[in-house]
Length: 132
View (spheres, helix red, strand yellow):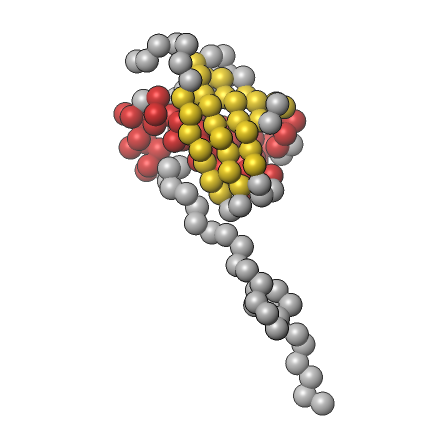
């Protein structure tokens, strides 16, 4: 096991959101953009999503987490934070990789919004057709 004074860094991505994540051995403090995670995300579902990598690896409350979340919305940022935490845990302990990989926490979700097409209202929605 590495020393207790070290920090582990990783980046996570989801939709248009990016999360720069630092984890360090500690008491479980969770800070996102200088606010607590509960205050930042505001929904219990997103809070649970972000803590999932720790619950799966039985490391809940053993790390202090500092996150700089950029771009996208709250939901995308929560997914990016989860991805970043998972990757940072791998940097901390490579033996956790199979557990995280099995649940798909290391895979970047490739789904992004489809871009708008010219001559249409949105990506696929056409203007209403009028026969007469």
